[in-house]
Amino acid sequence: LRFPAVGWAVRGDGEWPAYEVGEESGWWLHRARLLPEERRRPGIRAQVVRTELRGPKSAMYTAYVLHARTAFHVRGVSRRFSDFASLDDRLRARFPRAPPLPRSRRLLGLLSPAFVQERRQQLQDYLDQVLADRGLAYSDIVLNFLSLQGVQPVTEDDADAAAADRRRRR
Image (tube, rainbow, N blue to C red; front, side, top):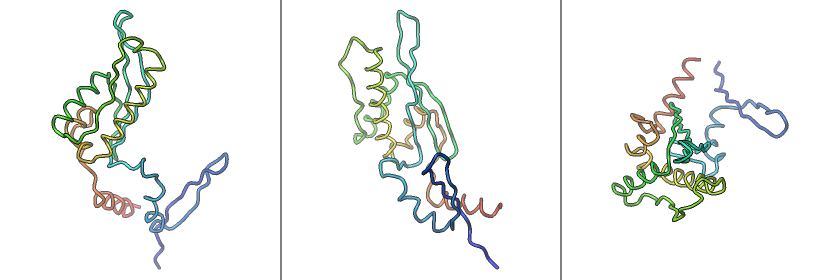
């Protein structure tokens, strides 16, 4: 007697999530369709989670706090806009197809909340574009910027082997 592998689907229609049981093989065939195209990443995701004002009052600057995630790593790093500019310069020198970093000609009001939030969104969009390209995402330049040195790309075969290993352990 053989039982099919079972997976759990979470549905959040009401106040509490509802768990529905289903065959894992049927679920995995449809998982790619559940994510919108713009949310699919080549394995590394980074999000600008917040901004912080740092430094003495005479020389304050904005730090952008990032959370970088892979299948097996999570890192929190803090970067200034000048770090993003340096990343952009190094990426574009090695990869001419790299997306350009949006830059501002503004000299005053760099610490205003409206400007900081606008720049935060621009930096998030820039990271999304860089990480959408697998070649850029796994370059040593980007991995060092996100403090993910030594991270290797996870292929579909690796993911399938890990899933099979988990099923064997049950």
